[in-house]
Length: 111
Image (tube, rainbow, N blue to C red):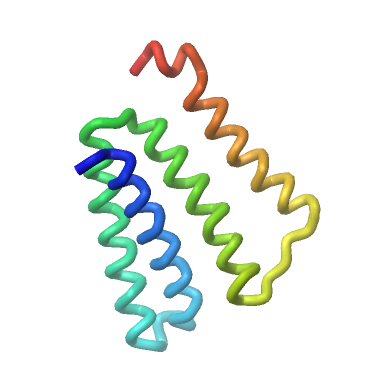
């Protein structure tokens, strides 16, 4: 399996699991609670597949950052949550941090 495809599946699974976590209402609704467990299990499995080839720092940074932005987007789109300018700036900084990490010549040389 291609490592970046595995990473993408891990990210989507994590966002799905986190969305279901909100819908589970403290694990009081069985179906969303089951989706939480399945989503996180799939996410960690595919994360482990990506880690067979890619550097751990890069994989975790991408997984976490895209998960944060994706989950925030789901919150806005489906749960009516809002993001002010400060929150948007924070999301931009998270993405910028990952880009800088993965493009760093010192990081690339070490891996």
